[in-house]
Length: 229
Length: 118
Image (tube, rainbow over all chains, first blue to last red; front, side):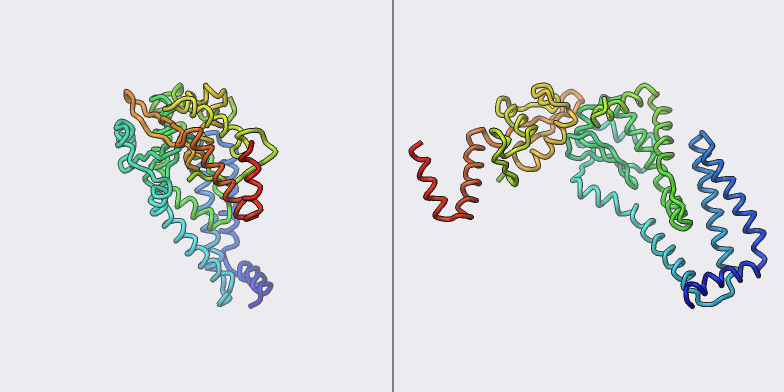
């Protein structure tokens, strides 16, 4: 079937089926949730409303496909293949990516240098491993179950600032298990997921653990190293 | 073997072979051993953000090496120049002359003769 015919087929089958009204209701609900996401101030509500809207959109997609009576549609098969492939990549990468990073950075367990960071993180999240890597530039990142801190950061951040950074990254590790699902949702609905809400929530967690003074001190250290004093 | 890719003949002094920040840092390291990142930033008056990135590059290229030291619960890098200033001069001279001979062969060597008398 040609592409134009497939599009016509979608129109015909949807109009002929009983899904038009439920679809309209769901789309309205999704629109309300997306609006809520845009207006809301609380990062948690934004995350929940955005994800719920995404899930509803996926439901709408499924309803449309179920309504299709035309057989052997290229667009449907292509979409299913796309979802399976992207899902495979999205869920497999977090499993192996941190091992790749350890090798690429030549990272070593931080307890070889100092013991308290790993202990501190163990109190916040069960399975996270803290590594240090060779670089004079202060940098910290989390991937999968691993947290990476550069020697440059250990050099130039004081203990409270380091705790703020570790708490922030530990929050990411806690939530890394859930993020693949959010990413998969956005691949399925073609609506990009916003990542900076996660950063704000990680910061909020950090300030709960170490206090706002330590967190803003760590932030200004970062600013200092990025040339903005 | 240090990494030496870029030569800019129109620059002054060491900056023919190294970037301005790299040259300043190397000069500082030749004056004193075992410097910390923050020491180098203070002595060269270069902001620590530029110093940190450049030190990573200098270590990677082989011009400097660093050790991680633990002092009273704190972790610090201590930097030293890999070669002395004279060893560096010999190394860079050799590399440049090698490349001239490689390109111009006996013509290059003929021209070296002019320098013996200087």
